[in-house]
Image (cartoon, rainbow, N blue to C red; front, side, top):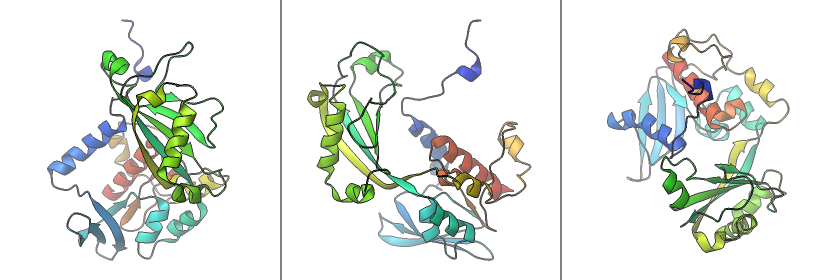
Length: 285
């Protein structure tokens, strides 16, 4: 009939990417293979397998895991520290890449904000002339609710983002300024387009990311594109449903495959997913 073409459809869920991660984790959790609440301390690649030492925060003990191969889905600067005898490409990537410090302020509101003439509020809203240096606007967590009545009446969360990569001593400020400083700044800047925000806000949660996203700089993609050049696995077409897109090389050693958006030089979900997919195929090859 008059249904829109499939390629123009929107694939989204009220929980955002949380819906995807929960379902990806479900079979691992059911099989007892999902270990959470652990911090990886060391990854060692040997002749016959891989050893991973991890600190279990629940038992307050160090566990050792062993496997024939492993996928290292860590930020590059973390992987370079925990992988023993890190390969040269990993060490060089950690030196060449740069990461921006980010702030995320989640503002809980108990009622929808008053509407104004003009464009309707969207999922991602960018402020014109944001007074906060590096302000990137906010996301309305309730915008994709399936029940339109809930979208108009139920409490929700506004996630305000601020990138401090261009702010002098931005990372130092992020570490030393109290959380109230950042919360008040976010409320003040959003109070411009939403004067009733202070009345509706019930809670503000501030999260600081010292190395949130890799910054695409001249020469980065050229450098990254030369890492891990190898013939793609013959399984790719079967697992990728016949996609014919250009294949991104996966950085690998004999027993390790590296997967993170850092290897694409651009930290977005799609790059992270693609890198994870490629690393999975690499260990199955």
